[in-house]
Amino acid sequence: MKTPITVSVTGAAGQIGYALLFRIASGAMFGPEQPVNLRLIEIEPALPALEGVVMELDDCAFPLLQDVVTTADLDEGFKEANWVLLVGSVPRKDGMERNDLLGINGKIFTGQGEAIGRSAAEDVRVLVVGNPCNTNCLIAMHHASGVPKERFFAMTMLDENRAKSQLAVKAGVHSSAVTNMCIWGNHSSTQYPDFYSAKINGVSAAEVIGDEAWLKETFIPAVQQRGSAIIKARGASSAASAANGVVDTVKRLTTPTPAGDWFSVAVCSPGAYGIDEGLIASMPIRTDDGETWSVVEGVQVNAFSRAKIDASVAELNAEKDAVSALL
Ligand code: NAI
Image 1 (cartoon, rainbow, N blue to C red):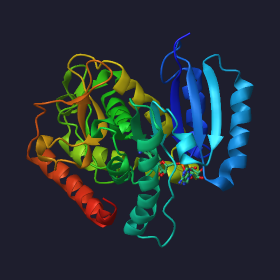
Image 2 (spheres, rainbow, N blue to C red):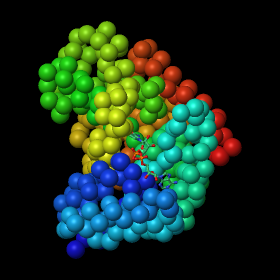
Image 3 (cartoon, rainbow, N blue to C red):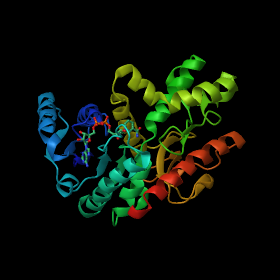
Image 4 (cartoon, protein in one colour):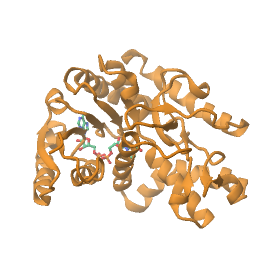
């Protein structure tokens, strides 16, 4: 049998956790021949609910699932983890300012970063989902002593999938016909889904759709505000599609990217495309070996795109300033 991959998940008893764990255990993330161990982390009050989720995992009798650990202890939770999925975070409540949220979560991600540095496997890769995910990722990265910064990611795949789906509906094609979709910047309402560089069946999406007003005034806000639209319709925030975004992100980082294509994930900026070095910002990424990644060079950034990217990067810089005491 192959050596199992150990995956740690925080917030495992939450909504996304409930949709995510079963897909990891079934083989959707690492393929049908790769066994997995799950290390599930929750705050103490949620541990009883987490036991219920584990009972359900047991009841699936997944052939690939080996060991399952539940804990509120970070070092136990991240022990020998090859992948750490930081999903848990404190949600914004009525009357809470964005900076309060940054501060509260900042402390959580400081401790989690430190524990990852102490306890995870040498090859650990970390994907932050809990919001504000870019800045939470920045904080965790800063405190994870000994873990290279290239191993930290924040999720914008759900936004990419939303953007592909919107373009596909408008163009009357299947979503798989849409490639080269890049979400730039922050996972927030300032994100920029770049329809100029996206392609539909290999041709510029802007050309195929031929309606720049729709792209600028309807498509961009629809992607940026899709999360709110889901909450309004469902009475709860996106969970299954967010979990699917996690599965897709890990898959895309661990399998070679098709020639000519790229995908969206926020990484520690190497200074590409004028995005300040060291910010966790989403940009076009590809991997040739499923282990290392690079920023795709030469993506056209026109004046419209430049302004949108700059606005989102300015927001990331403001978030960074708000948590500067933790960095
Ligand atoms: P949820 O509230 O259902 O679950 C969060 C879980 O995290 C709870 O069970 C809670 O007990 C746990 N938790 C809180 N603090 C923790 C800590 N310090 N350590 C371990 N666990 C902790 O929330 P849901 O719907 O599962 O969403 C999780 C996060 O993902 C939220 O921050 C949400 O905004 C974010 N999100 C991010 C997306 C993205 O595209 N990056 C998309 C959708 C959601």
